[in-house]
Each structure stands twice: as C-alpha cells, then as structure tokens.
Length: 493
Image 1: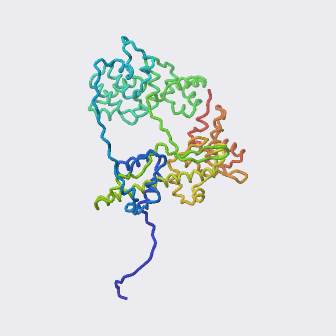
Image 2: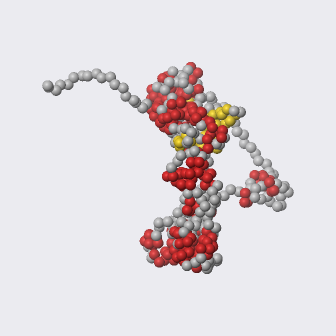
Image 3: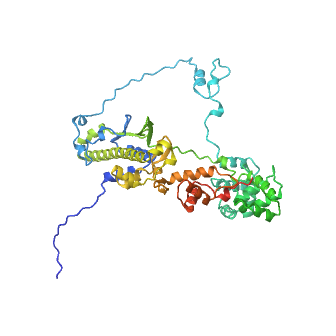
C-alpha cells in the first residue's frame, strides 16, 4: 500500500491553563506577606491600579460587570469615558516674616529630647523620657568582642587575627568547622600564632567564646583564672567522660575514675552549673509575629468566621488612566492590556479570600468539638473530606491551607494543623494524631523524674485509655515533641 498525504479533521479536548487561572492558582498558595509584596509590586508596575482607602479588597471597577477577556476596555460607561482629572487650584503662598524676638529656646526645649536649659524659666523636663528609655539597637556579639580586643594590648597583627577569628564565629558563638590551619593559611601566619591569639580570644567576655567543641568550652570555663575549679574529678569528667555524662552513665564514670557514686553526682552538679552556650545572651533574633488570615469568634452558641483584611492593600482601577482608552491606537492597546491585568488581579484576590473563608467554614464544621473543648477533641481529617464538602479539588484545598493561619478561641493555628491521620480506639471511633501527641506530652509532664516512662510504658498507659498505638509510633511522636528518651530524662539528684 502506497503512502500518501491527505487532509484529516479530528475533534479532541485538552485542558488549557489560561493566564487568569494561572494567576488565581499562584495567588491562592501565597502567604499573607507574599501576597502583600506582590500587590505592592503590581501597584508600582501597573498605572491603572491604585490603592483605595475604602473597606474591601477590590471595588466596583473590578467587579463582575467587566469581562476578563478585555471587552470591558472598550465597553466603559459614559461617565468613565468623560472622566478627566480635576484641575488643581493654585494656592498662593505668602511669605511669612519671623519676628526678631522669637523665643527659639522655648521651642527647642519643648520639641527635642535634649534636657532643658537650667537657666530657662520654663520647666517640663520631667515629662521627657529618660536616656535609658530611648530606643537603640542591641550590641552584637562581634561588636562586644571587637571592643574588648581594641581596648587590650594586641599588636597590629594579633588584632587582625583576632578580628578574623571573631568574624568566623557562628550564630552560637562557636568556631565550628574552621580550623587554626585554615585561618593561618588565609592570613599568611603560622598556626601557632593563630592558636595563641585564639586562646586570648577565648578568655574574653563571655568566657569560652570561639570554642571548637563542648569539651573545650567547659574546660576553659573550669580553668578560668578568676574562678578556677580545682576538683580533679570535675576536670577528669570534662576531659574524658562527657559522652557518658550525656547518657547518664554515672556508675561507669564512677568505676573509671575510682570514685564513689555520690562524688560523681556532686561533680556533675558543678559541671551543670557551667554554660555550654556562652553566647546565648547575644543571640538577638527578632520575634516573628503571625498575622491570622481569618478569625473564628464564638458568639453565643455559634461560631462566626470573619476575614482579616487589615494590612492588605485595597485595590481599585484608576478612572484617570481608563479614560485615556480612546486615545491613539498604541495608547489604547497599552491601556487595555493593563486594564485586563488589573481586573484579573482584583478578581483573583477576591476569589482567594472567598475560598479561604469557605475552607475555614468547612473545617469548623468537621472540628467543632476542637473549637469548643480543645486539642484532645481533635478529629481525624483529610483533604478529601473538605474538598468533597465544598465541591473543590483536593489540590485547591491544599494550596488554601498552606501558610494560612486562623485565630480561634483555642489559639492561633495553621489551617494544615486541623488535618491529621487517625489513631484507632476501642469503640469504633478514631482519634487525631495531634490529640495523641497531646496525651503523650501530658503523661511525660506528670511522670516521676526519677523513674520516667519508657516508650513501652506509654503504650500501656494509652492502651488503658482505649488508644491502640505501636511503640514505634510513640517514639516518633516523642521525637516530634522534642522530648528525650527515658534514659536521658532520668534525674538521680
């Protein structure tokens, strides 16, 4: 059979991601801060967008009356077409003459933080804030150490080495993986000279800064000239048995050191008085505040879901630029394109806010006992349950619950917090994994410190409450709660 070419018609369907849908999906998964930054960027790039002081996310200009395909650009109302910028009235500024006998001293005393002149008759100094009450940036660890180095008798080369060492410190104040040989090679000096300067830096305040490991940190503090620890047992434990001390191996330490167990306990108390992180007072991490996207308030017997629009820019379309759509062809094309972009953005933000409220209401319906009674009454919930309830796809619910927070009577939670796997219970119903974690935390908090519960014992205690759970699962939940094992939680003194 010979090959031949011929025209052929076929009908098929395929899913096409329109620009509007792509933008809506992108906005849906953004956090509150990311959305604010994106809107600010759009306000700078799109001249047809302007920020409104009115309540609400959008305005009537970007409502359903304008189609997203750009037809709204040509179908504006007569009032929009005739809209023009109002003329700005000229304001005549007259020159103000200042009297020669003006009391400048009184003005400065009442409008500055400088103390008033004692010779002046007016008071008011008591109302000014004190010097300690004025705001100043906290001193950093580098600044504190460099000040000490420059106030000491370091040579020029030693000061350069000390400054390089200080600049290499990690956030916890340790030298980390940086070696003396690397510093010497970088500065072109001998490792012995770097080691000598490092010893001096480690004696600065805070003591044992720039340590390379925990043993060196504790050893420097124990041998500090101002308050040395002369107990050989303490020094021996620091030098040889820190790993056993971490695992509470007190009997093994007593055998190796040839000391009584009580003496090992007393030496351990001394070591526990040392600071393993001497730079902790200079770690200044600014607090990260969470702004909820939605609120759930209890009014009477009902819960009310309200959207939090505070802090989000309110957008509207500028009539000044939209009125220029009937200018020349090039201007009309640009204005029409910017107008469609502005309308898509406003509608996408409105759709995003409506979807967040809809998902939150669905979560409230499934987790009502949590909002009334607390974490222990959290139910198992998956994305499919909420998706079927609000007739949306699971991926949409996943995007909505990512980096979105809700303020509830029980506290502020991420929306993903309410989705948990189920732990079987005797009686047919299931318990959420977060509720089981809370029960494990309560059991550990109320245990005897001298005889902490093992993972197997926690399994047995939960089994008495009708919760069937494996020991491996208890260990996993305990690690997620940042709780040590029973051997490391045991306190013998």
